[in-house]
Length: 146
Image 1 (tube, rainbow, N blue to C red):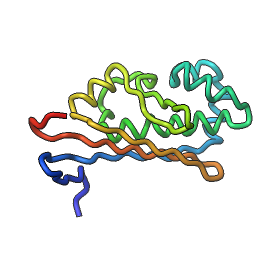
Image 2 (cartoon, rainbow, N blue to C red):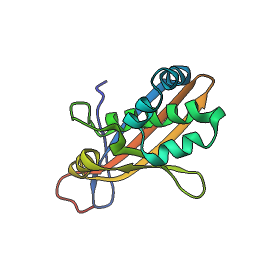
Image 3 (cartoon, rainbow, N blue to C red):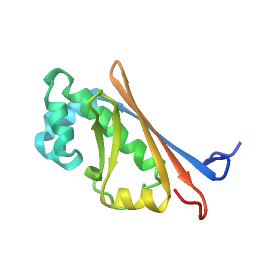
Image 4 (tube, rainbow, N blue to C red):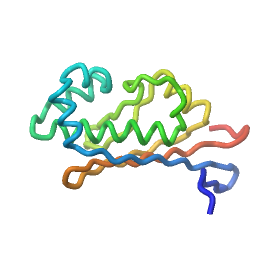
């Protein structure tokens, strides 16, 4: 069986479903935080992500690990592995209910527009020493309007 984008048709549109997933060891992120501190954090995470992670010291490494996994999963879903990308151009945002979504900036946003992404969905989870993220991107195909 060949892997690739899953296609399905709606009433009037042909769509492509792209997915990306990543698994991160929380203890490795904690080690990077200990070894590289602010340099590591500022290189990868936005001010909002940093503030959220820092708001609970016991959960700091876990929160950064989930966000790191989300960024990796987004890179895979949007096929950005060959693009020069600032990690902060992919941002995990939390709404008032605590639900996480993705914010895209710069090159990441341009790639999503070029791929005609109409929806992005993010799921984050943790079990023991591992954090995982799943990103699903729904893209329009051809000349269909978004």
